[in-house]
Amino acid sequence: MGPVPLCFLFSLTALGIFVGLAQGEDEYTWPHNKVPLVLDKRTVRLSRPGFTAEAQHELRGACGIECQSLLPKPSASDLENFLSYETVYENGTRTLTEVSLQNLDAAREEEEPPRNASSHIRRKREVYGTDSRFTIADKQFSTNYPFSTTAKVSTGCSGILVSPKHVLTAAHCIHDGQDYLKGAKKLRVGLLKLRSKRGKGGRGKGRRKGGEEGKGEGKGEGRRGRKNRSRRSTEVKKPSFRWTRVKQTQVPKGWLRGVGEDVAVDYDYALLELKRPHKQKFMDLGVVPSVTKLPAGRIHFSGFDDDRPGQLVYRFCSVSEESGDLLYQYCDTQPGSSGSGVYVRLKEPGKKKWKRKIIGVFSGHHWVDVNGVQQDYNVAVRITPTKYAQICHWVHGDSSECRAT
Image 1 (cartoon, rainbow, N blue to C red):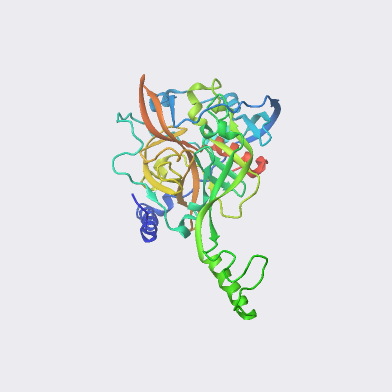
Image 2: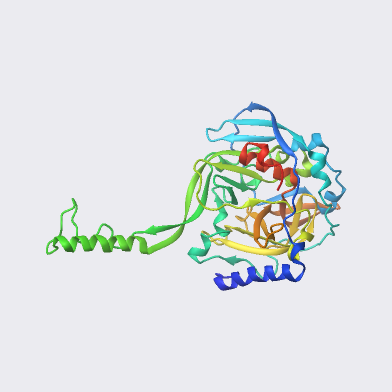
């Protein structure tokens, strides 16, 4: 699908609100969830990573929908193991931090089991039927919220801004489960910004090298020329990436191969801390117990798909199936959109205001095992209360900031 008129996107927003009102306005509100506290217990220094892994567009051998439903609920010690994390710093050093969980039982009491899922056999493809993706071509719209929170990761993935200096993305965008990607050694993140572009006048035809005025150009003429050139320099604006180096990267231990083979995809997320903060608006994290709590079960995300270089691509679709940690859907994607922040828009409790929050990370196109048969899905990792607690802890460095969503 081509560039999207602004009026069409605004009509989609209005339609979403109308659906919520028609089906019961108070039903579609952000839940007030208790979350456990993630506390750093011990940090040890590890050897430097090799940065030898190749980027992957598809992941195989993951536990499928039926497999997920048969997995026992992880114990507190299992969760502490999965939520322990590696940190890689800009200078290439690496540490492992072990964590402990507090108030886990209280957080689990509020969790609702997802509805049962059934398998769907279908052909391998990342675009299902008619391509329903929208290119956000308008330069003002693509650099305004919520699209302005979409980030491009230098390894070829997308991400989303969750604080002035933190970007959430997929773990496989920087680590293949065994080692960090080659491109992760000097990792950068780009955000679209409107930049002024100097017109054809350059320094101006009326001035010679060295600052001398040209023939026939009086003093007043020179001032007018400079004024006109200054106006031209701000007239032409085009969105372009403003790149920032990554200061440190954090990956949950649950993603690392050999730690928990059956749950690796459940922890396909990572946080990137930037060297310089951005002044633009970011998107908050949120937790939704089940997609049945969403209008039409619909999710949204934007990314930088490989088949549309330099363009911001937006899509939305309804979630077809879900497990406790994953969302299975038919959103049309292409490589490059992995790591995008999956968000929804719900009412704030007791208020008329609607707010977008991130409820997942798009992991990408996956081959998963369903009753011994490999099938493909487009999968997103959902933000559970424990994952919310971990990511919030990474962002703030203080668990007292992360007691509830």
